[in-house]
Length: 322
Image 1 (tube, one colour):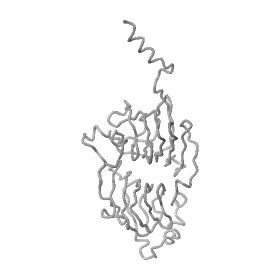
Image 2 (image 1 turned 45 degrees about the horizontal axis):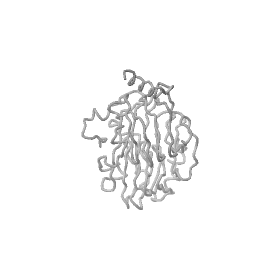
Image 3 (image 1 turned 45 degrees about the vertical axis):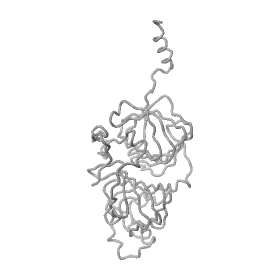
Image 4 (image 1 turned 90 degrees about the horizontal axis):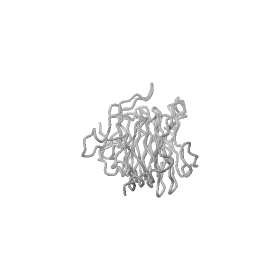
């Protein structure tokens, strides 16, 4: 199994191993990924062959593993599929989320262009697949996937085969399937917690658990305020464009936040109950967000001196003996 990114420091100093019980049903073994390097850009992360049994082999694709649970294979990977790759009709053995950053990916009768999303539940038939150009995407399976093709091998390899198949039309999870969400076609929605100048586009929500995937948009010169927050859920984000500056909970010292900038192709995966912020943006930003449970917040003052007399008191202390 491929391993997640590490720089020249020891793995213990970069990623705190998180083995915590989130609730009775969800357990996470991903390591905290939040460093100056990961926030700046993941483009220099190591590239490895991308292999999914019966779906793709390493000669057709490469991957950069952004974060991973090495015991289950749950992961987020930045994948490059080469022009001309194809795969037959089949279904995955685990839930898979796909977000296309650039290029075009044909999935059955749907074309995922740049900034397009798909949620494919385990057991739902899809395909055939192909790329007409090199395509870069975020690949986000819930576990190590296998692609099952035997049920469809003797059928015509056309889009109608997957969509008309009984495994699709009568599957208990058919209504969860999102073959295509195009970001450019979606309306902006108000955010629940953030100040004006922020909005979201909801890609996927599990109504039972609160698990969600969405796009966050921030206008230029947006600022959060004099507070930071924690959440009772894991959280990850990938910057599609723009920048986000502020006080980050770096994985080598998560409770002593450090100021840094998160830039285009920057990334973090953060465990639950690691407070972070506040943040602001100079040029505006577009980010892909995912949480494993419902996103609730608890708030903490960033500067406890809400009278904002810190500077005056410091100057008085400096000048008192002059």
